[in-house]
Amino acid sequence: MNLEDFETRVLPAKNKLFRFALRLLGSSEEAKDVVQETMIKVWNGRDMAEVQNMEAWCMRITKNLSLDKLRSRQRKSTGSIDVRFDMVHESLSPHEKTEIQESMKRIDELMAALPDKQRQVMHLRDIEGYSYNEICEVLELDMNQVKVNLFRARNSVREKLIKLNAYGL
Image 1 (spheres, helix red, strand yellow):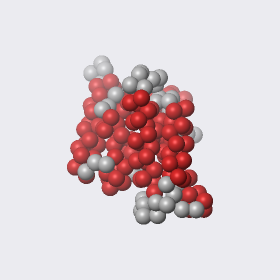
Image 2 (spheres, helix red, strand yellow):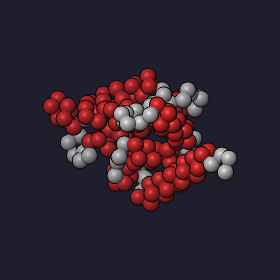
Image 3 (tube, helix red, strand yellow):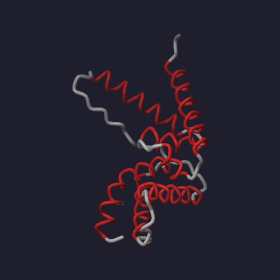
Image 4 (cartoon, one colour):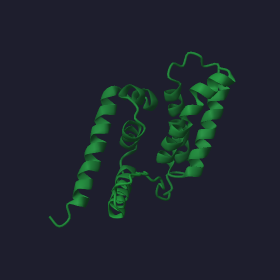
């Protein structure tokens, strides 16, 4: 792989890699470090011409490096993820915007409380928009495991969100 191939096949995925690492690690500084390490590993392994889905390969490297970082700090508690889902819509009132922001924050917190595999599968599918096959490749799971983890994750988040919103009924 030459510099031009690297710029066209790998660099466009850096934002997705960062969001994925951030979701796993909870720290933007550590996520930046992981993405940088991923880019270095991909560049050093640039003779990997047989890699068909470069983005999935990069996501797998990012996942492995993120999990290594988590293991190395032995799952110390981290601050909450400070990612905001910016929803800009001119016709929404300030009250509606606040409600949406609070709902997104609750969903983010509920996702953070999921078991690792469920959280990873849900993030890749619902936030990053990966196909089931790509998720299988990135997380090294079979299709049934991906579908079961996604189903359980979505059900768990849905049920907890319904309980939170059903107060007073």
